[in-house]
Structures are given as structure tokens and as C-alpha cells.
Length: 611
Ligand SMILES: Nc1ncnc2c1ncn2[C@@H]1O[C@H](COP(=O)(O)OP(=O)(O)OP(=O)(O)O)[C@@H](O)[C@H]1O
Ligand SMILES: Nc1ncnc2c1ncn2[C@@H]1O[C@H](COP(=O)(O)OP(=O)(O)OP(=O)(O)O)[C@@H](O)[C@H]1O
Image 1 (cartoon, helix red, strand yellow):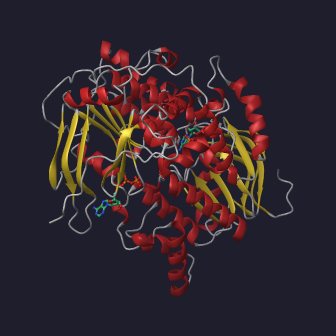
Image 2 (cartoon, rainbow, N blue to C red):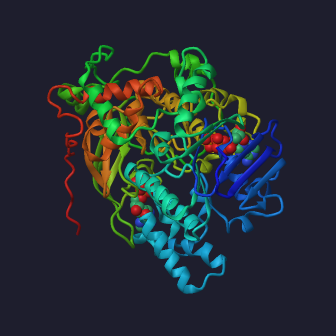
Image 3 (spheres, protein in one colour):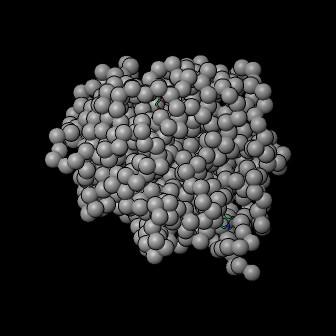
């Protein structure tokens, strides 16, 4: 794919790179050329080397990370060994996986201005560049806000704005949509496509959720264990994936997931047709919907534990833990799936009478200097309930979880939990305190997170997806399952196979009576683990109902869901795919409107008049 008439902007020649202290190279004899005007997607499962390749393009490898590099990397003709990130920034703008660490300035305006000022642009050009970037990224309303107050998605957009503000020739992006809501994610890919088509900007983008970006790409490079495994058009890539991925699989196949490969990119129109076809078919494999009482609450003390407290010493194996962390991943997969929650009106009645695992009563969060973030939120979770908390960037999801876990006190209203609340914050780095992965969590928890092989490494040296899984292992690692488990975007940076594993693990927690409250922008993951979706808008639930209704109906999810299902011709992870299809089909049960037309059920939470 390098035979373009356009000049090369990123060239790698026989590059082998090993991080300091690492036992094996993260890039192996990698040669490729990206030419001006290309839109390249980097694919490959977690740990394959995508971020390392992007770091080489920005000069962080080797200048910041150190390590050993052989071969040659040139960016805009500049040899990366002789030119550091400062020089290369004039050619390449970068968005890394953790916008928290990338955003350095105090306000959004100064963050967007920084790269332009750094280049010595006159004030008028800086002001214009800031305005353009803010408009393009939809962050103009945030310009004077302190960056430390921004939500995860807002921060991601600001970091990208700063990367684009100087109109670089090459843009390197590491999972730029991982924290964006579906609409913002689509807009971002659309924006990159426009930059690419109208300005000729070269895009190199690493993503796990290929269904969203593959249609925009004209070239896909797949890395497996640091080697170039495929380099071609999206069509070539899919053919390669279909051919090679099963061969990479262990029996029982998760199909394409081992290589982190996703379903074919289809247009939304085509996807909708597939969705309609799937809905028209009866599903003989769909299990009956059992009505079972939820498990009894295990405790009734009205306390909210401090999740900031470090986990107790690695616990001893006990029966409850064995149930949560079976010895091997395969064992985990073979474990019985969790009991389905009660369905239908009878189920809801029973759930309403059962003791709550969590109750929010007219919860308000009102900062001194701004509009209310949470507005009279009423929410009740039964023990074992599996709830996905969804909604656009800045809707208040993380703020809600922080209140549930006691990290923030409500300005009005109350939070009651029937025992310990465990919380995984959005930034995995907040949890890493030891020098060794093996010291961060017990061997069982590491095994459940698929990290046993990394026990002797430094936590900060893990790839983004690996670090996210480690933070999860730390939070889930305790002698007793918590009464309430809150996870804030736990699948960030995770490939499909690990997402499916997490859904199974969460199911086991729910089966022990833990209520799950999990924020996610990923409808596929929500379909795989959640029975109920609460959609937050403007600080209060605007829809609250069975996952099937929320995910299959309404404008918010229909496009995204259709696109994912559109590729379901055997390529979705079977578990997630089956759950999604069942969810969609269940949405057609008598009494529910057809997907695509159903208005999500509105919750009973009224707006409280503000004083
Ligand atoms: N700073 C580092 N020090 C040592 N090893 C590292 C470092 N960063 C990444 N690695 C290792 O290099 C390999 C490639 O990691 P990389 O982050 O490039 O993968 P990736 O494909 O981007 O993964 P993900 O999708 O999880 O972000 C992995 O084995 C990872 O553990
Ligand atoms: N101290 C504060 N003062 C004013 N506004 C704040 C403060 N902290 C957060 N906000 C704003 O409150 C809103 C809700 O933030 P929150 O992080 O809860 O959103 P979210 O739904 O989790 O978003 P995302 O999906 O992007 O992670 C955001 O617009 C954020 O900028």
C-alpha cells in the first residue's frame, strides 16, 4: 500500500524497538510507509504495538520512553533519532490514550492556544486557531472552563482540539473515541474524514471499535505481537481477517477477537437492513425469560465505604472468591451464566419490594460557581441488578458514581447503600501504587483480568488496555463482593475479547448479589452485561428501562446498534453478539414497540424546582 504518488509523511524501515527492561520487543522488524493524504486505521488486539507505533511517530519513542531502537523512523523526512517530540510536533499532532496526562494547561482556551503560541504564531492567528479548533470539536462553550473540571469525554475532545489547532500535516490518534458518546464519536470520525478530504491531512488512528471508523479508512494496518500482520484496503483487511483470524484462535473460537478484529464495515443503510432482517427472524436459541426473585440483600447497614481506601491485603482464597475468580479464563467461560433478573411487570414488582442495594433520593450536586450537575436524581438498584448508566458526554455520569461511592457529598438529597461500595474511576492510573503488577492485586484477580503473565512488570509499563484491566483487578479484589460495584467506563482501551470476559465476570458478581452500576458509551458492551439501562441527560435520568428497549429503540442508540449488528455475520464476539441479538429480539416482545421507533420509557423522576 505504499506505492502512492504522494510524498511519504511517516516511514519506518526495519524498526525493532524494546522498552527499557522489557524482555521482548514491542515492534519487530516493522517497515511501512504512510503517504500524505492517507486515512490509516491501526488494528490489532490489546498489547499488539499500536500505541508504540504512534509513540514512535511522535518521537516519544525513543526520546521519552528510552529503550533500544534499531532501523529508521522518519516523520516528514525528519529522522526521529535526531529530532525529538518538539521538532516533530511541527509535522505531527498527537492524541494519546490518557488525555488526563496530555492536557497540561489550566483552562481550555490556554490548552488550545498552547501549540500555536509554542510555534510563535502572532496573537491574532492564535485567537483564530483557538476559535476554529473549539468550533470543530464542539468545545466552544467550554473555552473558559478549568480543565480539571472537565468530564472524560470533554477532556478527550479538548486534547484532540489542541492536537489539531496547529493544522499538522499528520495526525496520530490513539483511540480518540474511547470516551465519547455515540453521537460525539460519529462526529469526530466525520471531522477527521473532512480534514483528510478537504485539507489532505494524513490520519493514523488506532482503534478497537472498528465498526465506527473502518468505513472512513482507505488503509488498515494490523499489528500482531509487534509485527505487521496485514496492510491493505479495508476490504483486503477483512478478507485477511476472515482467513487468518480463525487460525489464530484456540478451539471454541472467539473468531476474530483474538486479533482484535471487528465485523465488516458496512454503511448504516446496509446495517439497518441487517438489523431488520435479524428482527424478522424468530430466535430459536433465545432462552425463555425466567421470572425469579432477586437474591436477598446481604447487609443492611446504611454506609458508604470510602473507595479511596486501598484494598486490604491480598485475600485468601475462599469459596465466594473462587466463585468470582475461577482458576482459569477457560474455567471462567465454562461457569454457569448468571441467573437472569426478573423480567416484565411481575419481575419489577418483586424487585421493588425487595430491599434495595442502593437508593438515591432526590440527589442534587450543585457546584458553587456553575449550573447543577445532578438534579433531584431518584434511583433504586436491587441486589444483583445489572445497570448500564449511559448518556452524552458531560451528562453527569461520573459525578453520580462519585456520589454513590461517597467521594462527593450531595448538596441535597441522600445516598443509601446496603453495604460496601466499590468504585473504579475513569483513570486507571489513579489505582497504581506499587512497583510491580503482582503487588497490586491477588493472583486470582490478576488471572481473572488476564494479567498473570505480566506479574513482574511495572504497572506504568503496561499498554492502555492492560492498565485498565489491572485497575479493574485491583477494584474487584477483596475478600467479600461489594454490595454495589460502580465502574466508570471500564472497557476503555479494551479489545473485544477482554470486553466479553469482563461481561462474564460482572455477571458472576451480580449472581452473588452485587448491584452493578456501570457507565459506558459502548452499546455492545451494555447489551452484553446489562439488564437495565438508565439514560442520564442534563443531570437526571431521562429514560430508565430494560436494556432491550433502550438499546434497540430511540435515536440515541439505533444507528450505533444497527452498525454493530450489521457486521454480525459471524464476526462479532459470539457471546456479545448473542446477547445483542437476544436483546434486540426481546425488544419485540408483545407490549413493546418495534426497535427504531420505541420511545425509551421515561423514568418517574420529575425536575425539582430550583430555589
Ligand atoms: N512504557 C512501556 N514500558 C514497557 N513495555 C511497554 C510500555 N508500553 C507498552 N509496553 C508493552 O509493549 C507492548 C505493546 O504495547 P502497546 O501499548 O503498543 O499496545 P497496543 O496495541 O496499543 O495496546 P492497547 O490496545 O492495549 O493500547 C505490550 O506488551 C505492552 O505491555
Ligand atoms: N467542579 C465543577 N464545576 C462545574 N462543572 C463541573 C465541575 N465538575 C464537573 N463539572 C461538569 O459537570 C458535567 C458532568 O461531568 P461528568 O464527569 O459527571 O460527566 P459524564 O457524564 O461522566 O461525562 P463523560 O461521558 O464525558 O465522562 C460536565 O459538563 C463537567 O464539565
